Length: 224
Length: 224
DNA sequence: TTCTTGTACTTTGTATTCAATCTGTATAAA
DNA sequence: TTTATACAGATTGAATACAAAGTACAAGAA
Image 1 (cartoon, chains in turn cyan, green, purple, blue):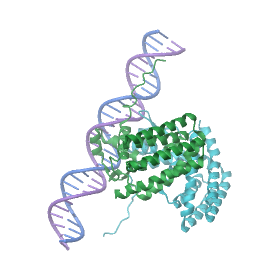
Image 2 (cartoon, rainbow over the protein chains, first blue to last red; image 1 turned 180 degrees about the vertical axis):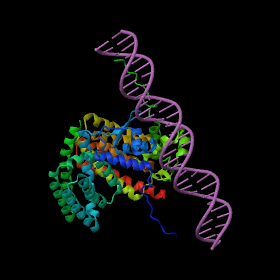
Image 3 (cartoon, rainbow over the protein chains, first blue to last red; image 1 turned 90 degrees about the horizontal axis):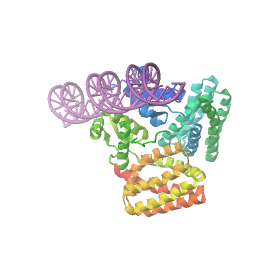
Image 4 (tube, protein in one colour; image 1 turned 45 degrees about the vertical axis):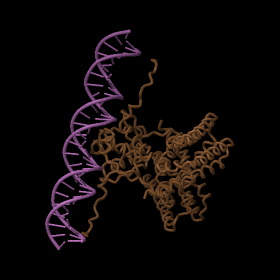
């Protein structure tokens, strides 16, 4: 064979995917606010592409629950009511319970090490006091658990569920007073996996989620 | 106000949605088989539209998990491995457990009546021995439960999970020997709601799902 | 004033066009 | 025979063009 010149493979994504990722990020970070219109021409100009990939990206966002489109009127960033939030959390609670159950059975030693490292990384991130990296470190921590559950379908579904609330969560994490609580919870979770105590873990995860709901609820109230 | 003349509202859907529904149905009914290529031009000609709405519909199918596309190679109907099926069922088990829990708390009397009627309709459908209407009646029965859970987000997620396996389920339901068992299970479910016995219900639902897994597994094995 | 109606403008829906990539086959070289 | 190369046709990716609604605002009627 000729030697391989390990190419880009990155700029090689179809534009629709690039656009999709860009918009998704923007929505989750709050740069595109709930209710904001997604006008095709506008976005196309801004991103320097034609309307075609924009439209395809919007169809994808729609299916992910991040955008809503009304035929012949256009798309907008999805809004969430308090009820929606409540509903999503109810679902996440059930799915996370499943995830820890599976993970408890299936987590490898290597993954357990990874989990401990993810916790350390999270602590480090809170010290840097940069919201973006804190959120990412928190996601990474939970990603390890989801991966350990060894159920890609579950992972998918959980991801789409958490996406729906993550853009509200940014506000929550902005408040430094919750850092120590989060760190504590993460430690407790590691402890639970150490002992492979499923019921204990389900409980913590439940608290972990409940703690968020009130904070997020505040944010949603303001959005009106 | 002037009197309302409850209009069409049906032929008024954008083509992408018409195409999406058409393809979705075809995939679920098995007219488009797992692994089959979804060629844009071909579908466009067949449905008498241009490639644009076809492409958008494919993006939607993709996000629903019914199609998979490889950049620059095109889309195909998603295949499922046995592992995938196992994974989806694991998730559905958890979600259905949540659904009956919520439904048990929240089901109105009217909905309970609806549920009993749905059961009768299912029995009637099995006597007609028409697979299509049996499957539909079964879905309708479970829809009543999901609606009673009063959590639209949950409903959404469950729907996408069951969609992924329904095309394999057709084969299962084709076998008349399972009719009586299904009828029996439905009766037991009604009984559970009558007594509002959550744990009992979770159990039946679990059996109800497990019964399907083996049959579906057969079908998937054949697909190779 | 308040409600229509008309019209220009914006935006979405769909088709068409052109470019890039992939696939398969046939031919040539080893 | 096997491997490489080249080329043609098929197919996807993206841009552009045109058609159909939808929106907003101004002028005129009630």
